[in-house]
Structure formats: structure tokens, C-alpha cells
Amino acid sequence: MARKRVLWQLYPPYLIIIVLSIVAVAWYAVGSIRSFYFKDTLTRLEVENRLISASLRSDLQAGDRVQLQRDVKAASARFDGRITVVATDGTVLADSHADPARMENHARRPEIAAALTTGEGHSTRFSNTLQRELMYVALRLDIDTRQRFIVRTALPLTMVQQAISGLRNRLLWSALLAAVLAGLVGLFLTRRLVRPLETLRANALQLAAGHLHTRVPLSETEEFAALAEAMNHMARELEERINTISSQRNEQDAILSSMVEGIIAVDNDRRIMRLNRAAATMLSLEAENVQGQSIQAAIRHAELLRLIDATFSQAGTVEGEIQLSNETGTALQCRGGLLRAIDGSRLGVIM
Image 1 (cartoon, rainbow, N blue to C red):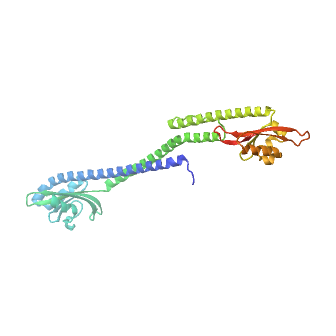
Image 2: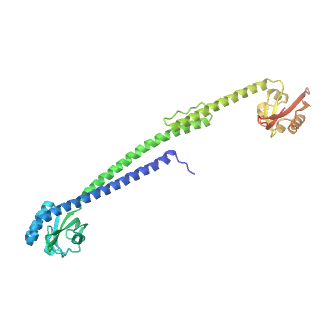
Image 3: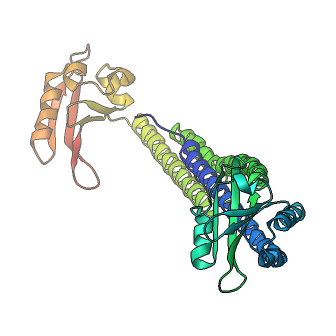
């Protein structure tokens, strides 16, 4: 299984969360702004409609359609939008942007139908007359109980859509810039978080290589500083123990080397653990060469091997005398016993 660095385990999820958060905020902001523009346009259309309806009341009462058409066009020029006056049967009486005589019946237009029923209606749809999308607001104008008309105001959504589009583009570029900055800041913070780990790893490798004098620098982060202190404490403890063991071993080697008696330590697998200089000289062996060798391969004295085997077999001390096959025929007095650890387990024998 491929291993990943901590940096690449922490940074991508952070970056994804940041980007998704910014995209969500940007999407919500664009939607909110679009909703605000539409509500603002709808409110403007309602206010203009009520003002225009009041100004057209006298023309509708008089039934003067020519003057009504003139006043509708004049109001449209001031309002900068479309105005349509419709009878309750759907007949178009006046329109600021088209010839009412050529316009089809408007009774089924959604905003007109709603105004006839509830008194007001609005919709956003494509205009077949102007060939573009408009927002419509229709209000019922009651002259008296027998005379009712629908006054409709409309504004093209082109300007609203252009404003929303421009704002959306600026918002998206801002969101992109914010994502890049957040990504860079996140990378910097993640690298700053990971750097103490890399330092710990490098120093741990130094300690593992035996450089126990190495000390891990303390980080500003509490958790990393505690880990560094623990590693430094462990390094000091190991260094002290190894120095103690080395010192004790040197002392043992000095004692064994200076002894006149020959000493051989054999482990449970019948391999030579230790052999001092005196024993090597007596047995004509090279102490460095036989270390770790089987006693059968290193020692050619059958009596000595028998005494070692007897020591393994018995719980007590074994004594005996062997005759060396040298020129002088030296006789050696041998004494062997079990070699035990501190917990009492048998490590081997010592002769």
C-alpha cells in the first residue's frame, strides 16, 4: 500500500472544503441578489402602475381611446417601460409599444387573468409582441361597479439580467481569488503544521541509527513539544544505559583478561559466549575467532567437552581434571556450574 505524506492527507480535504464553501456562498449570494433585483423591479412596477392608473382614470371614464393611447405613450416615455390597458373581456384598448387594433385578445394572459380574479397579477415571461422577456404587473382599475379595466405595466429583464450577470461575474472572480488565497494560506498553515513532524521523523531516524546524542528541538506547538521532550528523555535514558552497559562490559573484560584462571561461558545451544585470554592460551585458541562457534567445532578436548555436557545435565557444580595434549602435558583442574540470569532462568554454563 502506497504511503502518503501527512501534508497531502491534510491539505486536499481542506482545499476541497474551502472551495465548496466559497462556491456555496457565491451561489447563494447570486441567488439572493437575483431575488432582490426581481423583487425591486416588481415593486417598482406596482408603484408605477398605481400612479399611471390614476392618471388614466379620466380617459377611461370618457371612453376616449385616442386620448388614452396618447396618454399611455406619454406615460411610457416617462416610465421607460411598457403600458397596456385591457378591457375585462381581454380586448386591448391601448398599448405603448404596439398598435392595439392588431393585438390579440389578452384574456388568457396569466397576469391579466389573475388581475380580473383577485385584483392584481404578475408574471415573468417571453413577450410575443416585443420578442423579449418581460416582467408584468397587472392591476384592476375599478371606475365604478360597471366599468372595470386592467392596467398592465411591464419592464424588460434585459437590464436586470445584465446587472445580475455583471455582478455574478465580479462575484465569481472574487470567489476564485478568495479560493486561491485560501488555498495558499491553507498550504502555508499545513506545511507549518507538518514541519515539526518532519523534524521529529528526521531526529527519530538519527536516534535509530545510534546517534543517541541527538536532541529534538522543541516546537511551539504543545503536543509536538511534549513528544519532542519524550524522545529527548528516551534518548538520554538509552545513552545512559548503553554507557553503563559498556562501562560494565569493559570492566568485565578487564577483569576476565587479567585473571590467571581460564574461563569459558557456553550458552544453551552449546556455543561459546565468552572466552578470556587465559583460557584461549591454555586451549591454543584465538578468542576473537571462536566467539559464537559451537564448542564441538572450536574445542578438540573430549574430556573438557564431557565436563561441559555433565554441567548441563546436573544442577550442581561439576569438577574434573583434564590432560592437555601439548608438549608439557599440562593438567588442568576444571570446575563448572550453571550460568543463570537474574530471574533464575538458565543461560548456559561457565567452566
